[in-house]
Length: 153
Image (cartoon, rainbow, N blue to C red):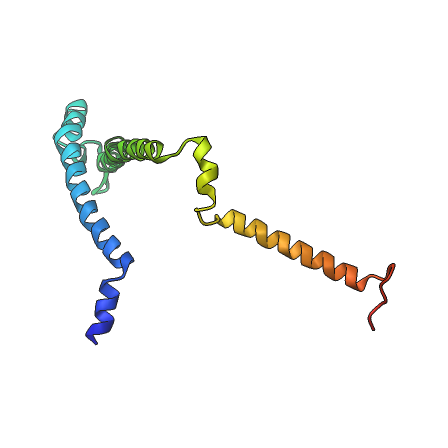
């Protein structure tokens, strides 16, 4: 009973998922702080309201249509997306490119290391295609009557 649970917990994807949840929670706190403490006050000042939830309310037959709240949610979503992109995604991608550039090797040594690297998926598929083509060609030669060949019955 505990052996199966231990194997489940120690799988790489479960641990990776747990790390992603923890980091996601930390990112959420940072993003929410930036949105709530910088951008929301700017929006409130621009619309002269304490929040957009209280702006743009239309009342029809006792029902309130809160256009300001919807607009506020859309603006907040866009702000969160911009903050996540420019604060996290863009710098991390830049660091990844810089790390890859440092790890990449000069063109002269690529030929030396090519034999050490396993074949890529594309190279394996090309090899399989070529093998199948040769097999089909060989089968066609065996079944076709020609010089020195006798038809099989």
